[in-house]
Every structure is written in structure tokens, then in C-alpha cells.
Length: 325
Image (tube, rainbow, N blue to C red; front, side, top):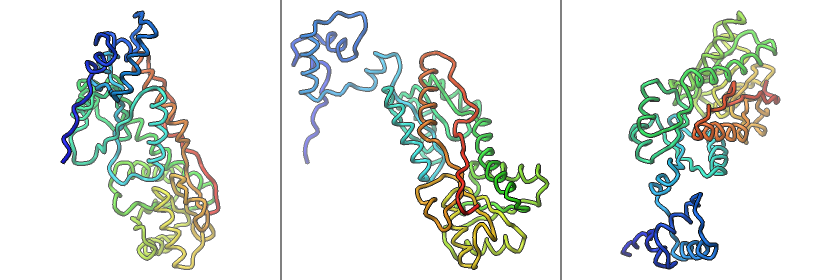
């Protein structure tokens, strides 16, 4: 077994460059107010490159007054295709400002979020799950300067997605709606809040009672849910996500039914497979690049001590019309 190499330190860089450790710190941290000759600066940078020197996060934090770590609290599994795209865009936007994104499954069985925040020395925490006031305060005590994502805002945005789905189906003249729950995660708060948005719209529009059913990602069990909706007179189905919506379409196909003629179906996510489903899936999409940029800017505003910028909706749901509804 190979013996691990000793970690290269700033003292090693100083010896290699023939300068003091303080000079190395000034150069590598680009400290303002210090006049370092260009030849000396080049020697330090060349020595650091030759030695493959990587500064410790704690040292960078001390120099900058904060860490460059942003912690993203995610809901439990599964990580859907659209959520993965959101994470990629947010990470890219933060990286453009020198910040590193660390993700955490906050509904898993690992360490508590405030403990992890302290362990990785996160300067900011972004939440895709609702925080109560106690958790928010604990995160601040753990060192987070910025905590984004209040429970009320998150719930309102999830409900807005459900409302957008339902309003579209109501606009098509559908008199009774069903809701396709993901079978394995039907009790998750994200699922329930989207469902609540659909239910509230049905009540406000005077429609018949919403009929939610769990739908497996398998055509045969999905067909059983379709049978129930048909018996109940359901003419439009809102699905929690695109994958569940496609299972509904597969179940309808087994029963010889067509969308939207028999039942109109709308999903959420606009995953890559949505345009090539049969029929192409009407869904609710999101501008992940814009959302990532906005969230990154909000973090930067907070870290700079300014009041974070706000927007009506972080997720900005957009209706994507195709043939299924």
C-alpha cells in the first residue's frame, strides 16, 4: 500500500520561492494594500504550481472573513432529472462568483443540517425544504451568514405549480380532476403542497371533489388508477411530475384510451423525455438557468451585507403546451 504523501503547506511554498510565509499569504490571497514586486509574485505563483499547493478551506476563510461554501438542503430521494438540472445551474452560477456548492439530503438519516453547516463552515444555506424558525436560528449560530428559503415561501411556490396545472385543465373545460401521486413518495410535503394547490383551485372553481390516487411507474398498476378515474368521471389528471404523468399515459394506452380526448394529462418538470412521450406531454417547466443566477445573486447580496434581492417566485413555473392536454 502506498504511503500517503504529506500535504503541501504554505511554508513549503515559501521555502521553494525563497520568500517569507507572510509574502506567500499576501500573494495567494491577493491581499489588498500590499505592494509585492511582480517578480516576487511570479516566483510565489510558480512555486505553488510546481508543488501543486492547495490552500486549506479554513485558511481561505480566515483570509476572506468567510468561507466560499454554500450548502444546499435538498428533500429526500429521489433526485429527479429536473432537480439535477437545477443543481447544475445553481452550482455553475455560484462557481462564477468563486463559491462552491455542497448538497445535503436534509430529509435523510445523516447528521443534522446545523451540524453539517458548522462542519463544512458554510457561509450560506439555501433550502428546498421548509425551515422552522428554530432551525433557521440554529443555522445562523452554526456560522451561516445567509439562510434562504422560508417554509411559507416554499409552500406557496409548490401550491402555485399545482394551481397552474389545474387552471390549464379547467380552461380546457374539464369538469372533474384527478391527481396522480408518486406511489413511493406520496406523503412527502412537496407532493402534498402541489396537491393542495390543485385541490384549492378545484374548490374555488366549483369543480367536483379532486380524486388523488397513487400511481406506480408501471403500466399495469397505472391502468388500475385510470379505471378508478374513469368510473368517477374524471376528465383531466394533474401529475406530481412528468414521470408519473407518463405512467398515467401508459395506463391509458393499456385501456384503449387517448389523451386528451378521454383524459387530459399534465405533468411537472419538462424532462427531456416529455416531448417524445406518446402523445407529447403538456407540463410545467422551469427556467433553471435564470433561477440559478437569481439565487446566486441573492447569496452574494446577503454575504455582502446588503438586503437579499427578492422575487415573487424562485421557481418561476411556466406552462409548456403539448398534445396531452
